[in-house]
Amino acid sequence: MSSKKTNGGNNKKSIAPTVLSALTIAPAIITAVEELIDKLPDIPSKVGVPQLYGLGFPLKLDQAITRLTKVGLTVMPSELSIGEADPKYRNCVDSEVVDSDPKPKQKVAAGYPVIIRYVTQEVIDESKRLFEELERQKAEANRIKNEKREHQKAQAQRTIADAAIQVKGLPEKILHYNKKGTKSKAP
Image (tube, rainbow, N blue to C red; front, side):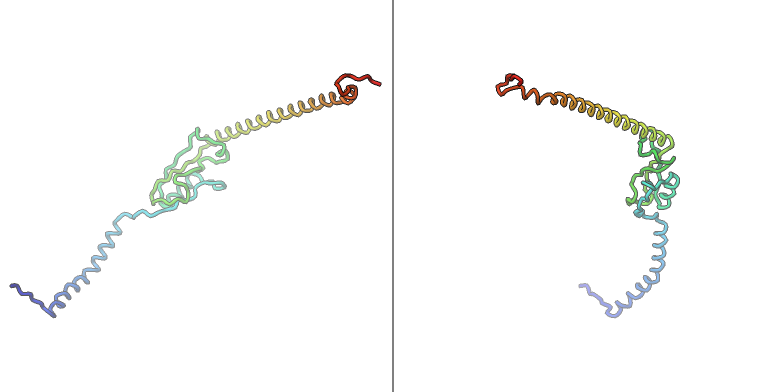
C-alpha cells in the first residue's frame, strides 16, 4: 500500500517560492514580448483611397502620387493610349488623373497598389479633334433636318394652294348639277 503524504501547511510554503520567482521573471518576459512585437512587421490596416480626380478637381500625376504615398498606398501610374481618347478629356490638362482602380473612398490594405490613369497632351489633342468632329456631324445633321423641314413646308403650301384653286370654282360647279348627276341648264 502506498501512503499519501500530505504536508498540510507545508503545501502553502512550497508554492510561495514559485509565485515569487514568477513575479520576478514576469517583467523580463513582458519586456521581451514587447521587443519581439516591435520587430514584427506592421499588420496592414485598412486605408481609404483618397479623391484623385473628378469634376472641378484636376490633380496632376505627381500630386496624385504624393497623396497616395502619404496614406501608405503603392502607386502604379498608367497613361491613357491615343485609342482611349474621348471628347470628355478635351478640357483636361497634360498629366491630369482621370481614373483610378480602386475607386476613391474604397478601403484597402496599407501598401495596396493603386492604378492611376492619366491623360497626355496627345490624348487631349485627339479628344478635342473628336469633339469637333462630333459637333460638325451634329451641325450637319441639323442642317439636313432643317432643309427637309423647309422642303416639307413648301410642299404643304403648294398642296394647300392647289387645293384652294380647285375649291374656288367648286360652288358654281355644284350648283350646275342636279340631283341625278346630270348637268342642269343655267338660267
